[in-house]
Amino acid sequence: MIAIMGAMPEEIEPILDFIGEYRSYEFAQNIYYQGEYKGIPLVVAYSKIGKVFASLTASVLIQHFKAEKLLFTGVAGALNPSLKIGDLIAARRLCQHDLDITAFGHPFGYVPEGKVFIEADRELLLLAHEVAREKGIDLKEGTVATGDQFIADPAKKEWIATTFGADAIEMEGAAVAVVCDAFSVPFFILRSISDAADMEASFDFDSFLRDSSRRSGEFMRAMLDRMA
Ligand code: ADE
Image (cartoon, rainbow, N blue to C red; front, side, top):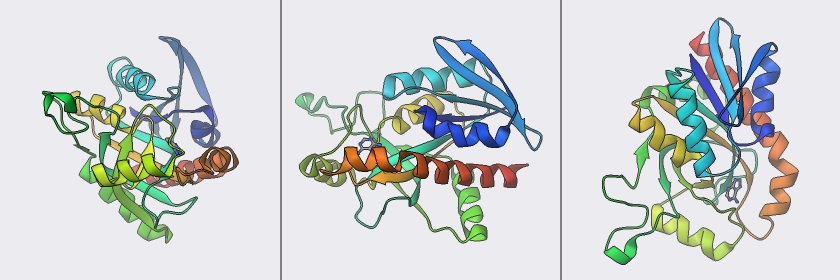
């Protein structure tokens, strides 16, 4: 069973569109869609926004639906100026930019027995790069910072970019990474840029959520084509 997860309905809509037929199950106040694509059993869900909901959904996908791999599709804000709206970035590693017990002498993003950065699965990243090469898509790879804040402020954006060496910002990836890492489930997090986390971010996000989600979803489909 492969899980495909997003945070918002718009992020998983492209996936449900190409699956076509699926059954819906309610579990822990969320809906999970089960179907298949080219013979691959899939379970698809959107978590709702933020790290807590994302952790819950990832845990349910793994523990209840027995997902053996977890793929995340959705949108992100660009921190790296080379990333433009619509570009695709795969997370090589993820961190929580809003995790802060620096008062105790720890680095930002760290709590005892945790890690600042969690690495995504190498094989899934390699597969993604093969798909990108085949399709002539310029897939970027980098550090994704996650936190329970929509960033629309140049100073905050700059702080996150420099503190974590981050290329993109979103609100779920590191939570999914923590859960998958704990359960030893290989994961892959793909984001298409919807905004630049600046003063125009909320406006751009609303304008580009659908198009960017579709780009990310189409790339996921191409990855499943390779896995089938
Ligand atoms: N997801 C998409 N754009 C974002 C932003 N600017 N901040 C946080 N999450 C996002």
